[in-house]
Each structure stands twice: as structure tokens, then as C-alpha cells.
Amino acid sequence: MGTKSNGSLDLLSVFLTGIPGLEAQRGWLSIPFFTMYIVAIVGNSLIMAAVQVDPALSEPMYLFLSMLAVTEVGVSVSTLPTVMGILWFGACQIDFDGCLAQMFFIHTFSCMESGVLLAMSYDRFVAIYNPLRYTAILTLPHIISMDLVISLKSVTLMAPLPILLRQLPYCHTNILSHSYCLHSDLIQLPCADTKLNSILGLAIVLATFGLDSLFIVVSYMLILYTVLGIASGEGRWKALNTCVSHICAVLVYYVPMIGVSVMHRAAKHASPVVHTLMSSIYLFVPPLLNPIIYSVKTKPIRQGIATLFSCKTELL
Image 1 (tube, one colour):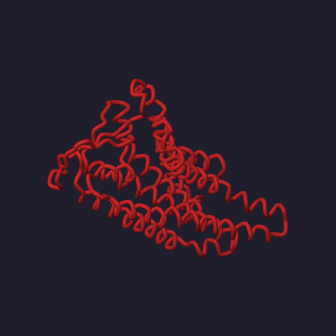
Image 2: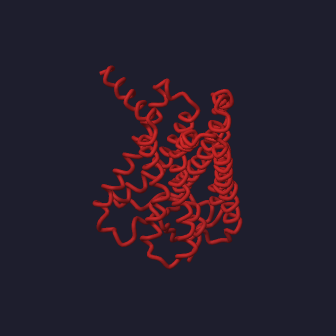
Image 3: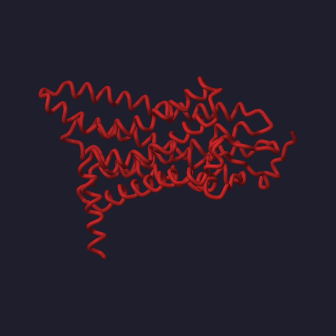
């Protein structure tokens, strides 16, 4: 199999894969996928708008929730063009630079989402451990600084991935196993040693998702220790109840990620459909479910969305 030189990368195309074996059902499959995208993008956008408009949602908890909604819209918008392009038009081909750009944005927003979940666990710890100084500790400048650090860290860590991939020679046949471009897929394509890319990818995973999940667990151990020190049972329940939505968001984010990792290692010979569906759950489910979770469990969010619609009605 021949190779392409670095100078011809502008002409290189990558072929994406839909759901294997279900090519004839693309029209029908587009309905649930498009519905998920609409619910995820509209739901998260409503949360962002409600936090922006409603003064009652100016507490740190809701500002962090707005940041989480931004990252989830980013993940959804990053995958939407190729996924729906395949389902609607059978457009499986994407140019190499476009594929690298999509990979960068998917991984960057995913990394940001993990960082925001960690920041939200810190928010819950401060709210329970020191409620009287909660707003004094988590001031708006402090929250903005945390947001900037999370964003800068994500961009800085992910930027080398497309740069290194672009330096490698590629084979004539470049077929990926998903409907979008992921680093784990792209490092299988070069006709050269990709050990450096693999090591860097693993280091980034450990430095982001690994450390974030560890610190989230530590935060909740400290929260549990603090809650157990509360005298009344009602007070303990009230404190823990403020964490339920965040715990659900953490589980919705990390459980599919762990599932995908286990599938790739323990079930390598499973049907390609299973691998594709597991990867889709990892990327599509958190943006879809988190707005629903927070809307159901958090009364101020429901009231904020209602306020948003009442403002729109008055303007009309």
C-alpha cells in the first residue's frame, strides 16, 4: 500500500463510517439522532440563556452549570456535521484538515467538560463545608479565572495532537470506524510509527480525565465526611440533596467513557455495531441528559427557563 508525502496532505481524504450493517436504514436512523441533537443543543442553550437572564441564577452553582452547558453544546456541534451528513446525504468523505479540526474540537470540549465537572465538585464542597463564606470564596472573578484555566489547559493539551498527526505520511486507504474523527482512530492511519502519538494521547487522558475523576472522588469523600458531622438527619439529607444533580452528571459523563474503554480492551471481537453505539453513547448522552437532569432536579433552573419564556412573550 503506497504512502502520501506530507506535501500532498491537502489532497488527502478520510472516509467515515456510519453504523455498520445499517446503511439501508440511514433515513430512519437520522430521526432519533437529529432529535437528540435538537434536545441537547436547545436544552443546554436554554440553561445558558436562563442563567444569563434570571438574577436568581447568579449563584456560583448556576454559573458553573452554564459553563457545563457551553461545553456540551460544543461537543454536540462538533460531531453534528459529519454524523448528520452521513445519515442524510451519505457524505462519508471528509478532507484531512477538516478531520483534524473536528478531532481537536471534540477532544477539547470533552476535556473542558471534565474540568468543569471537577470545578462543580469543588463548588459543592465549599457550599457544604463553609456555607457562610460560599459566595465570598467563589466570587465572579474567581469563577471566571477557573473557567479560563480550564479552557486554556484543554486547548494547550489538545493542540499538539493534530500538529503531530499532520507530520506523518499516510496510506492511500484511510477509513475511520466512526461517524466523526477521534484521535484513537486517526493514529491507526499513518504508514509510520505512531508510538509518540499514542504515548502523548495516553498522557493527556491521565492528566485530564484521570486526575479530574480522582479529584472528584476526593471532593465527595470530603463532602461525605463533612455531612456526617452535621448533627441533624434533616440537615445531612438537605446537604446531600444539593449534590444529586452533579453526581448524576458525573455518572452520565464517566460511566460511558469507562464502558468504551473496557469495550476496546475486553471485547475487541464484539460486533462493530456495539463499538459504534458505545462510542455514540459516550459523546451523545451527556449533552442530552444533563439539561433534563438539572431541569428536573433543580427548581430554580425550571423557574429560570419559565422566566426566560415569559420575557420572550412580553417582548412579542
